Amino acid sequence: MAEIKIKSVAKRFGKVEALKSIDLTIADQEFLVLLGASGCGKTTLLRIVAGLETASEGEIWIGDKRVDQLPPRDRGIAMVFQNYAVFPHLTVFENIAFGLRMAKVDQATIEKRVSKTAELMHIEALLKRYSGQLSGGQRQRVAVARALAMEPEVLLMDEPLSNLDALLRMEMRAELKSVLAESKTTTIYVTHDQVEAMSMADRIAIMNKGEIVQASDAVDIYRNPAHRFVGSFIGNPPMNFLPAKPRSEDTWSVAGVKLSGPNHNAAASASSVEFAIRPEDLIPVSEASEDAFTAQVRVIEPLGSHVLASCMVDDQLFRVVVDSDKSLQQGDTLYVKPMYDRMRWFDSSTERSL
Amino acid sequence: MTVDGTSKTMLWTFRISTVVLCLWVLVPIYFLLTNTLSSPEEVVAFPKRVWPSFNLESISFFLTFSGVGAAMWNSVLVASVTMVLSIAAGAPAGYALSRFDFKGKSFYRVLILMTRAFPLPLLALPLAVLYIRIGLDDTILGLALLHTMLALPFAVLITFSLFSGIPVELEEAAWTLGCNRFQAFRKVILPLVLPGITASAIFAFVISWNEVFGAAVLTIENRTLPAFLLQGLDQAPLHLKFAGGAVLVIPALIFIFMVRKYLFAMWGIANR
Image (cartoon, rainbow over the protein chains, first blue to last red):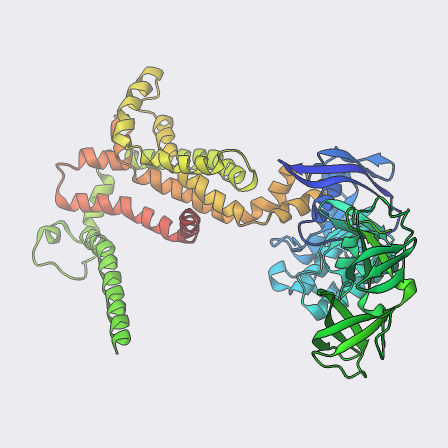
């Protein structure tokens, strides 16, 4: 139960810059998800908070204590690892009790806490077993129970669900969320799975190439990407991007369609501007018009509730989500109108939103 | 047809080579054992009996032969000291190799093996001179130091493969749960590697137990069993030689058989 402050933390491995000056504050009891593709530095950042890695620069504060010079055991954290790291030579009970024994907690308290957390994670029947006798999902539960039994100020989770199969992952996702909400522990959770991130997080910090490009709640990140990368990474399918040419003071020409966008003067520094829209924010219209894109349908993927059509607009890939009632065929020409309040604009040199 | 023929030839080549290799190892051991368990008369007799008479005369005579007891005790002492020293030095080196990145790591690994490339005769004579100068000649410790040098590469490589087989996350988990580096090692890593360390220790013991050249050069009064046999049994009757051989070979065989799993692990790593 503490606030985490990450102050201009940078990490270099030789000449490779893994993290470029990260600033992030995680509020008390907040569930923050670090989301990014593999190699973006999210695990490195988590390990720096845990003390398993040293930052090249910057400070880490947990509560009102600066911890970046402290070893992991003095930071008031607990961590859940991707491969669970359940000690194979100890029973489930002793695994959960491990941290408490190190903290010299008396036996009665240990028993009480172990049975409480085991109950919470539904593993009370497994306490006498060894790691080798458990399934992946059960090991995962033991790993979480072991971390929770410490009653840490901060809980760090490194892709804890990525080794589980899809169904179990969905089940554990909901369960973890409720357990963590109850424990009221400040949590940093690393994942590369955007569905996991959006369904669990209070706030998502999206990382790209060692930087946090946007930190906000799931809906805001989805609707208002602050960076071109966020739009192209979040959402399945991701956003469509098309180059925009200036037309008059605040109108732009995008693939021959006239759209009103950011003021030219505001975008003056921008050498070029890109128009972006989500595939589901396009409305099919019956015939060609000045304000509708002309899309040549290339691939059709019927997905039950809707149909995903991959089209070409001005020789650029352009995806459209249409209702499954609409009959579409490869080679068809589709006319779609963007929903005006859902249009987004990006400066293509800085990749920031305008 | 041709494919079938080729694979059949391959199969038979494989079978025959396996049998030949097994015989290569097993026939001498068979003769060693049967002759040890035969009476002195039967040892020199011809033709031989397939099954020994389980006569314990040779072996009991050998064991009471003057000097054998002392030599065996020396062997045990030297081997024990070798075992302790090679683990004390080898296990930390193996741990460091598996857990830390440092410059020249792969070169260092090769270098460890290279120590075995030195012919012992080349080393033993200067060493004997040095030992005489510093007063280590003809001592248990002096010989154990030489044997440690011989056993150390194996100790390092076996423990390296053991530690590499343990996920770093187990240690890291222990650190986050309140352990310092040493406690994490003692409470998590050590229990997991202990069987392997024991195997590595036994292997060091066997290397020392079998070593004859260094022992013969570096000791005079405090001979180990192999050196004693080399010197003393030269003129001894045949049945005594067989008994001496068996006493040397059997403990080594049993030990190696016990730890074979870990030796394979080491070679698996060395092949990479």
